[in-house]
Length: 303
Image (cartoon, rainbow, N blue to C red; front, top):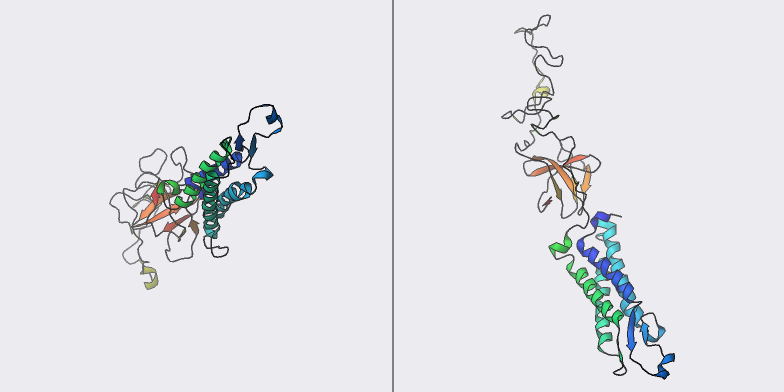
């Protein structure tokens, strides 16, 4: 169950279902009666009254069932995108039920009164308004961008304090230290990772007691070792980490092997951190700290 997969349209569907349930207990019919003979007459009836059957199942319960089907489909996430019942997905059945309940409610409001003293109560009108919202949100939810936006995001309230180094930030590696690339350095050159001359035990040139290589002491490396792997796209020099969401499920490839087996999957409705840019691709970080290469960055929503 993925709660972050819910959208604003799903929230409108759930709210309309709650109002519809409340409306079922409010008076559907009201009777204007005065005099002593009215003492034994029920002046109002709600949808649960057997005298109003089938108002309850054809309007109220059908609308609540429609909302339940839509929300169940959303809770299941992308894994249920192709699951169908009699040729339709659960959310498609829910949309059809919502429209049917609204159509029945319109006909019920248009007739059925037996005289000028009988009128529809607040429960009938509140149920009608709830079904308008329910059917509208169900039909327009997948189409309107404002309703497709995620309802819950996991964007933190404070700036990200993870391990991605920012040049110049206190406590973070500076250019030239711990392998962090120096401005203008060849991006294909392997970083030194602290192997600076004279620093952290690395021998400085000409240090006493250290043997210096002679002109004939250098052994050529084998041809296989000299063959360098294909260079990866260089990280963008002016890149800053940012949060983003994907419009559809997308897989993450290994950072150093774009054609390798996927290391994770990005799903809509969840915010992920982009920690590096390699050409048009992004290195994304999952909630468990796993990092991978997102090759398809089309249509992503930046936070």
